[in-house]
Image 1 (cartoon, rainbow, N blue to C red):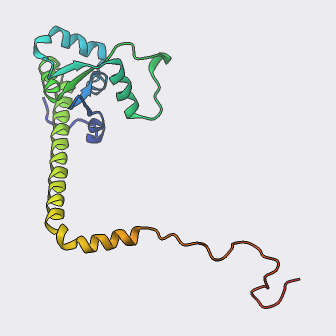
Image 2: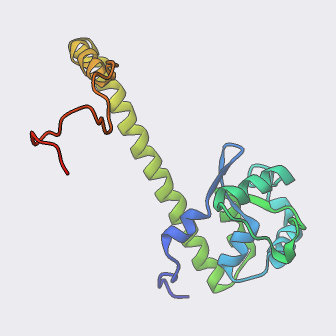
Image 3: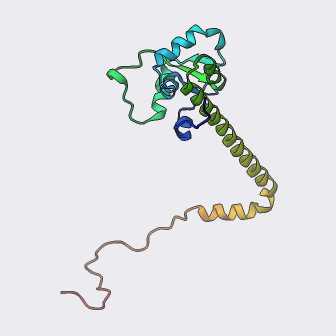
Amino acid sequence: MSNTPLPLPAERIEQKILLLRGHKVMLSGDLARLYGIKAKVLLQAVRRNLERFPEDFMFQLTRKATEMAVRSRSQIVTLNRGGNVKYLPFAFTEQGVAMLSSILRSRRAVQVNIEIMRAFVRLKQMLATHADLAHKLDALEQKYDAQFRIAFDAIRELMTPVESPRKTRIGFDPKRPHPAGRARR
């Protein structure tokens, strides 16, 4: 087995990670497409090994959650065969995706799982970085808030629009002389 990277852009995998029920998950249909198999084959393998997938590793979506997940991906949704989703998809948490590697043993499945695990790690690092920056900003705001209150208040006052009555009318006034000093012909 080679360690050559899979020709899947990291962004493509990261776009498939959703936040549902407080967990970062990937849907069974998306996983099947990444693995290059049909969703039916993926779920058959999971059903044969259900003891490996407790509720915190995998759960089935409700119809409402499925519709929301589909809508959140695109503004225009086109379903196959012009109907609703026939089978409700399963959502796999990071641990569930890792467990898939133990039941899907093809070379592609192993490489895809490696890339998916890397995507989950990148996502965690990105979230940690943003949380750290937000924490530092809050600390700075609390530390300097008293010192800069006058400046903040002045900025807010400058941002508030001043309403003044309009003194001049806009438009043509036939009684008013032409600005060039003589009337036009």
